[in-house]
Image 1: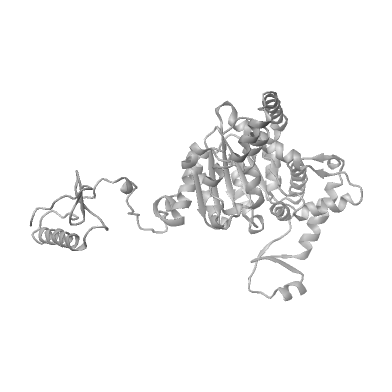
Image 2: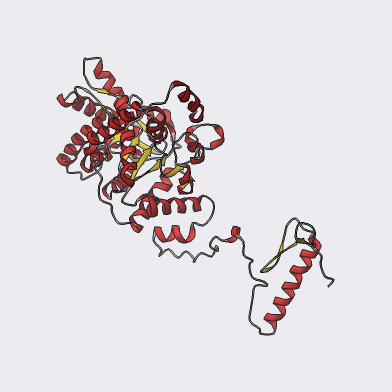
Amino acid sequence: MPKKKKNDNGRERGGFKASRHGKRASAAGPKSAQKKAAEEREADLGSSVASGGKPHTGRPTPSNRFLSGEKIAPKPITGSESVADLIDNAFLAYNAARLREACHLFTRKMLEPDVTVGMTLTGALTPAGLGMAALIPLIESGFVDWIVSTGANLYHDTHFGLGLAMHRGNPQESDVVLREEGIVRIYDVFFDYDVLLSTDAFFRAIIQSPEFQRPMSSAEFHHMCGKFVVEREKKLGLGRKSLLGAAYEYGVPIYTSSPGDSSIGMNVAALALDGNKCVIDPNADVNETASIVLEAKRGGGRSGVLICGGGSPKNFVLQTEPQIQEVLGIDEKGHDFFLQITDARPDTGGLSGATPAEAVSWGKIDPDRLPDAVVCYLDSTVALPLLTSYAHARHKPRKLKRLYDRRKAMMKRLLDEYRRSSDHAPDVAHTDSKLPMHR
């Protein structure tokens, strides 16, 4: 074979690139020489095997940073493996691999003792039973320290704490017939219309209690609701069924980014017509959630967010950093860990699909921590049970942070730092020059 010459860019003619490990084929090179070289390797391999020689694969894989990942060579699935072992062994590519990365990020980094974990809940998760199956176990193990949820998830969660039933159903049933039969459905979750009426009546009764007659944050409101739900669970002998009840008992504050956007808020509004003094204060929510994140970052601690879905709860948990930095003027760098489970696309411009890289430009995510960010494009009802099982299999329970009990102290720190930053505020011209960087 004639000796090949190198061209000006160092690649050998014939489509091979020289390296210390031998020649590497390139898809950009001439195909004839590459084809011939491959045939020669195969002939050499066939000859070696036929003569009883030591088998080989033709040639070793050259050193290349793009080939530094583990080889895809999973063990056969037999049915005897645990969920955690299945994820580690067989979830190797595509969104399965992103879920594997999510499980590793959560258990290996986000559950370190110094990390405060905030979680968001969007979509009808509690009607599907995920409050009992996943969310309560995460709270009990200290894996979730604070929550931002849609009001609907908390409303439907309460059904279970009141002993009211939700059923699996056929989504192909006629909705006209279901209405005539007094059945309400959330896709394939069916329940009696009276479940709504009974839950509404429960909330109206407790909201008229003396302790509710004042403005309060949604965390305070849900904490007191959880107390009443726990009392009802005990009277009915149900055990722990309600997320609100578990959060009350374990000191996990739950916020709602849109208090009026649920049946709970609708009942609060209805009672206001009768002179009830219960008011959920969104200002308190904005400042309390910011104080949680600031407290997490001070003293060498870190903040992580586990986002199930998107929507308003996602923005509310992430806006804590712009509130600290942009609005209050306190020096900070953004959340340290970002884990999102979503089925939304980023290219439509909606926040639900926005990537962690985009969040960096707003100051929501620390740019130095982007490697600690995973987006898993998967239905939360699939991913959340798997993540919960994996976390319990791979990590021991954490000490409870009981952030609800520390709300006053955290708010004092926020207020103190805000006042100090205000004392050293930049002049107007300097402030104007900075604003476009955050928009």
